[in-house]
Amino acid sequence: MHEGLSMKRGRLLIFTVSLLIIGLMVTMGGCGDESKDATETTITPPAETTATTTDASTSETSDTTAPAQSESEPAGEVGATVSVSSTNGAYPTENVPDWSRIKSVGAYRDASYGVASIYVNLATDEVTADSLSEYRALPKPEPGEGRIKLVLTRTARDVNQPPHVTGKYDFTVSQGTVELTGEAGIVLPGGSTITFAKGTEMESDVEITAISDTEVSGTFFVKDKWSEISGTFTAPLK
Image (cartoon, rainbow, N blue to C red):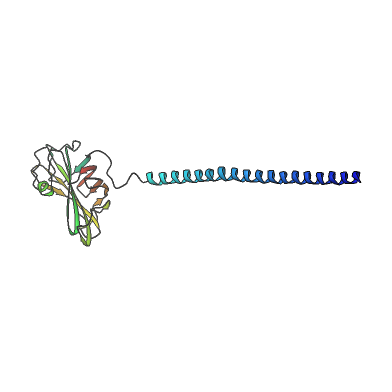
């Protein structure tokens, strides 16, 4: 009787211990899973976020700095180069202007309804003008001096004081024939001016390459049957 009771108690004890062991194993397994999930959540998202932020920052910086240099802004110091040749009877044979020495460079704007012009003055003598009216009143060149004058005109009908623009200006046609036209002249000692005859025998390649509120840059080549001028300029614009 006692022996059977002892056997039953032993089995009950073994069963109870087994249940406790199983419970402990389940609890430990659950803790391990939660620890693993917590580790993945903490590490992975920051890595992805950092990569995205870095790429976006790099892209924005590149896009912002790429167009920093504008083609419409004049680049370079104020000055000019000029070459002149002429067989026109009015061109001097003595005291010929030294076109390799351009001492004065200026540009003057003018605009009205439908028309805007820039007057460029490239002179071998030292002259200054702070406005278009002063430019028009400049004294005549002395013997041995001369000036190149360029008038670059934009015609924009129905536009009040159209803005000046970069581009090619056609000196072979009259104003208004196309949007961008121009005129050129060689101002001689005493004030007489050699102009260029428009037509089929005239050639021109004149361009405003850059312009701002204070400066204008360009290149020019104008030729007819008797005279030819060419050069470059960067001039203060007033």
